[in-house]
Length: 86
Image 1 (cartoon, rainbow, N blue to C red):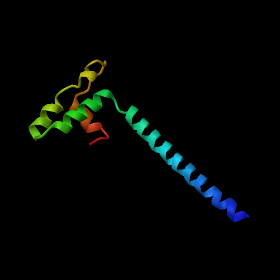
Image 2: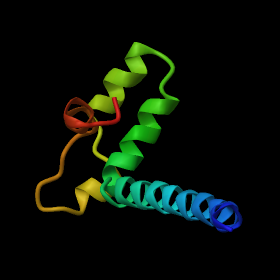
Image 3: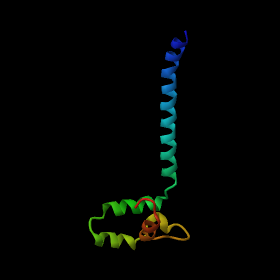
Image 4: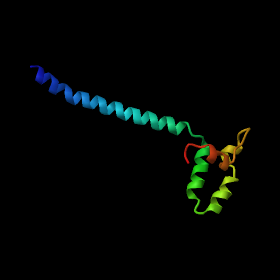
């Protein structure tokens, strides 16, 4: 009798674990997504598009459009040095 109960609980346990893992991944993605500024995302995309060292040097001196709206704008080079997305 206990074997029937254990086999009936096994799919439920696997489903609960799968749902828990999915929620943890979703929460992690949301935290990382909302913890990155718009200026950081803009600079990252500029650096990703850079093909040469000269492109990167040019981007280092630019300010992202959304960074210019703040009281203390930061250049893309400053954000690259201090970023987690190296």
